[in-house]
Length: 124
Image 1 (tube, rainbow, N blue to C red):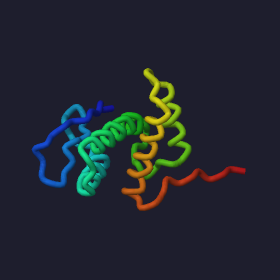
Image 2: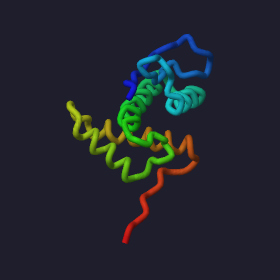
Image 3: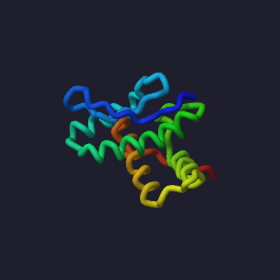
């Protein structure tokens, strides 16, 4: 498992977010950075891009520890596991932080798959 970090690099081309999620070898995590680039094109402020970057960094660190790290596998049950994970960390994030992170993850999923995160099938 590669540790991720948020890197600031304002030497990129116009329309590219200066905030990049990278691993220990400085390799970019494409599925997060592509989303950040589009938010930059939508003229999000640098502060918003930074906030989204940290939210995505938190999610990516949790998500990429899983056996299947394909974002396509995300569902509401896994999202609840992510909330539980956040509530077990110290210092514990505020409810506003948890909700903001969830909102960003939902937007990320919708961006990549053009639909909302699926609900689990109800087992009877």
